[in-house]
Image (tube, rainbow, N blue to C red; front, side):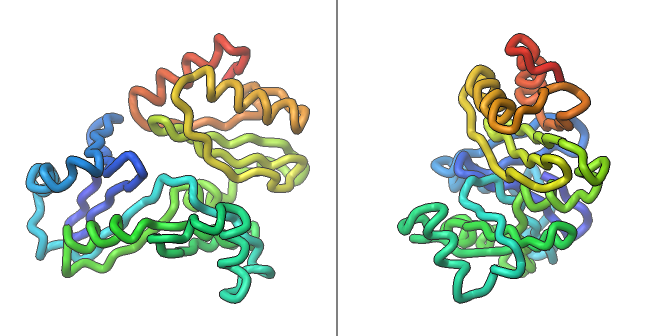
Length: 229
């Protein structure tokens, strides 16, 4: 949760609405089944009246996305690409948004459930709503590749979500999210990437960031599984 004058920032995931604290690394999660009951509490935390919000930014933490090279991304083919990658039923009850990542000449197409959008609109009826995906924000950072032929795994952990991108010899090979229930599950997935691309999981090859105490604990626990980051 970030409030800047008339601009509000929130995160949505299948778990619910994530409220980031400005003063700490703590995150409060309000699950979707309780959101209506806690809507008044949410407005109280935001400390702003509905009519005062001009801009609302919603950052999506979700696995329904596809990174498409811009030369192949057309309205004619985008739906077909998404259905092939995510399943024919994946688009039901959801709307497609896109986020360009110009430096790798690709677009991140991602899905947002319509009921999430309805809730966002009901929160601040007068606000202009902007949706973005957290992986798109991470990929937009041009410093991901240290050198032209470098190999680098970028990892961002927030709660049970691990968003990652892998540049192997300077070329993007992986842009994915792994939803884990334990550090062991995450370690197993990271070691599968290590084996597939024959890379070492060390501080030199892995660039890792996290948000929240739970995520920090996960990172610290990875060392026991020979992931020295």
